[in-house]
Length: 415
Ligand SMILES: Cc1cc2nc3c(=O)[nH]c(=O)nc-3n(C[C@H](O)[C@H](O)[C@H](O)COP(=O)(O)O)c2cc1C
Image (cartoon, rainbow, N blue to C red; front, side, top):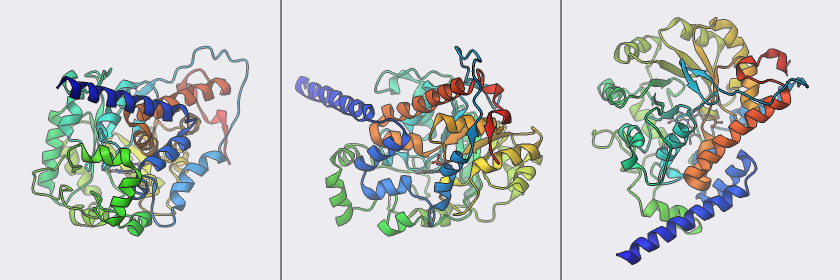
C-alpha cells in the first residue's frame, strides 16, 4: 500500500517536472501549439487546431491583427498599469473570457476542470460548452476543496457561464438551463452560428469521431504518444458529460461531429426563439456568433446583454469576416445597448489591446488555453493566461496608457 502511494507521488512529481520543463521552452502561444501538436495524436490535434474548408478564416482571424499598428506615446508615467475592467457589471482582472470548447478532455484528462480552475484563479469568466466533457455540477463543485486534486486558489467567486447549442429537444435544453441556474452559473451564451456543422476537412480526412474510434491508425498514433494514451486509459471514458443518462447521444458510441450536430441541433432556430430563452433564463444572455453589423443591430433590440463577434474560430463558414474587423462598425451601430466581445484570433496580449482600442468590452479565445492544456495540463492553461495578461500590461506600458479603460482609437492606426 505504502509502496503504491509512493509510486503515485513519484509519478505526479515526474509529470509536474516534465510539464514545467516543456513550458520553460515556450515563449508564446505558437510555441504552446507546437508542444501540443507533438504530444497529441494527429487526429486529436487536428480536431483542436483545424477549421472549415480551406481554413482561410482561421488564418485571417489572426493575420488581421498585424494590420493594426500602434501610436506609442512616451513619458507618460506607466509605473502602475491597470488591466481590470467590468464584464457584465462584475470586475475581471483583465478583459478576457474563456470561450467554450467541446470535448476538452480529449487534450488532457482534467479537461474543463483545469480550464475553469485557471479562469477562476485569474478572476475571469469560464464558459462551459453544451458539449463539455465535465458536467455543470463538476464545474460548480470546483469551489469545494474536497474536489481538488492539487492546491488551488479557486474561490466561491468563480464565474461560470454556460454555452448553449440549441437542440431540437427544448425539454432537455430547459433541464440543462435549470441545472445551470441551480449551480449558480452566472450567464448563458447562445451559439447562433451552427445551424449545420462547417466542413472541417482535417477531421474528414482522418475519419475523426467523438470519442476517437479505435482502429489501426489510432492504435499506431497512440503508441507514438504514450503520455496522452496513458492519460486516456487510466481515466473514465470521455463523454458529453451534461447529457450522460439522459437518453440522448452522450458520446458513448463513436459519432462524427457533423452527424451529432445534424441530429441534435435545431436548424429552424430564429430570432423569435431568443424570447423563449428570456422566459426560461433570468440572468444575463450573450449571443455568440454575430458576424454582421445588420445582425448586431437586431441583437441590440432583443432582451440580451452582450454579443460575441465570432466566426467560431473559423470552424463554420470559411471566408466569414474576422471579428476584429467588425468591432468598430458594430460598436457604432449598437449605441452602447449591449456589451461587445471579440472572439477569435487572439494570440497575444497586444491583440487584446488592439481590440479594446477599437471599442470591444472584452476578448475571448478558445485555442490558446486548449493548446496550453494539451501541452502541459492545468499549468499550460495558466501559462497561456499569464502570457496574455503580461503581454497586455507590457503593450500598454510601451504604448503609454496606464488604464485599460483609457484605450481608444487614438492609440492605433488602421485604415
Ligand atoms: C476544439 C474547439 C472546440 C470548440 N467547441 C465549441 C463549442 O462547443 N461551442 C462553441 O460555441 N464554440 C466552440 N468552439 C469555438 C470557440 O468557442 C471560439 O469561438 C473559437 O475557438 C475562437 O477562436 P480562437 O480559437 O482563435 O480563439 C470551439 C473551438 C475549438 C478550437
